[in-house]
Length: 198
Image (cartoon, rainbow, N blue to C red):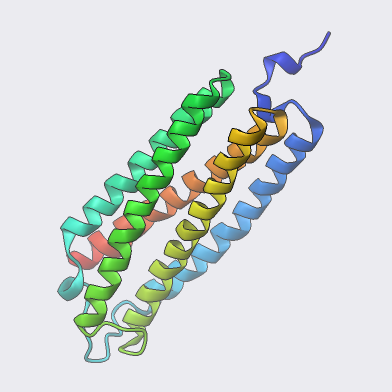
């Protein structure tokens, strides 16, 4: 008896299952990268060297907007994966495109925030605090930027090739990556911004 039909499309091939497992291993390495950045940030967050502190430069409004955009994009990509699993290619592509547009909006606000920090004298060279802040936020922002290109490539592949075990696996792996970026942002929001504003 073939059990494949009981499994989601992305798990139906041995290669797909291996690729998904491999990506979980990659995410473990990514967790270590961000854990190192957070540890460095917490070690240096009070070393302002006469430059501005978090309480002086952080503003709740742009950070809340960024958070809403990214949390919403994570929910929407979940809808995209559901659409993929029920074989609705058009809905899946639509949800992925909305996810990418929300990610682009997030990135726009983050770039604006960086420009504001620089104008307020918070640069990589200002202090240990601002250097680690910029490095941590910049690393996350670079991951989002990469995600926008990757997600666009997946949308184009699904549009061209349809929903196959291969495109489903790629789409599912991308969704794991996007959820991971969301989880990292929740840590940034909670432990860098909210803590820094207190």
